Amino acid sequence: MEQRRNILRGLVGGAVLWSAGSGVRAQAAAFSSRRITVTTRGRGADVLLIPGLASTAEVWRGVADRLAGKRRLHLVSVRGFGDLPAGANASGAVMAAVAAEVRRYIAEQGLERPAVIGHSMGGQVGLRVAADAGARIGRVMVVDSSPFFPALISPQATVGDVEPIAQLAYQAIHFLGDEALRARGRQLGVELGGATDAVFGTLGWQGGDRRVLAQSLYEVMTVDLRRRLPDITAPVTVVYGWSADGNSPRSRTDSLFRGAYSRLRTPAAFVPIEGAEHMVMIDQPTRFMAAVDRFLG
Image (cartoon, rainbow, N blue to C red; front, top):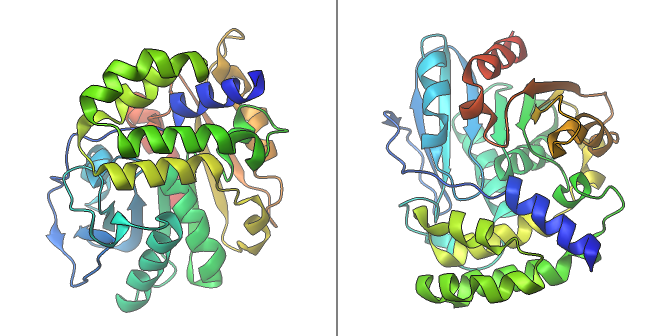
């Protein structure tokens, strides 16, 4: 039970994000999907940017502003996050279907070996795309994202360890109204190790379809993509927040991320960014952009 509580504390402190909206300045691409939207900016080599749980492409605004003069950016948003209608994401699994739509977009738009940058859940989507698309992907950057998030809290964690917690979080988000969630947060916190304020205060209600949020959070907590890592042929760069303070949980991220990606065919490039938490590109924008520039070459 204590291990499950520790896993949840770390998950909700890292994997759960929000977005202020979806108003990225862009021209809509000639692409129609019931699961994602894609907008494009700039000219040059192709770069896909995929946001995380409960975020839209707006989270990449600062990055897009800096890159649009030298790259053609494809900014992905998942339907059901922010103010986007849920579409086909309103029922069933989300991440695998979203990854399939990203691959379809790449094929239909004729993108040649694009770079893919994904944050948190978007990083997991990027890993799926790279594993399934093989040599059609040029390179991948995952930002504070793991192929199995619970392993960042406890390397020995299994899907079975986190499944009961994921089910409870799913049910709470899916079935309770906003006011009921706030009222019951303290009660649920007794069972979940006091971490529910982070879940229900953040997912919160910054916008998003409850069905999509619930299912996506469940998948972020339980999906284990480590077995797919050997299928990835594109070079992978892993960027994450780090702290030199031994009392900070972020002081352990370097070893934990290196362990998480150990099954890749070719060792990843690891880029710890001191002073950043989960939202690396917002917490330390200058250092993050330096990492992106190196990644894109």
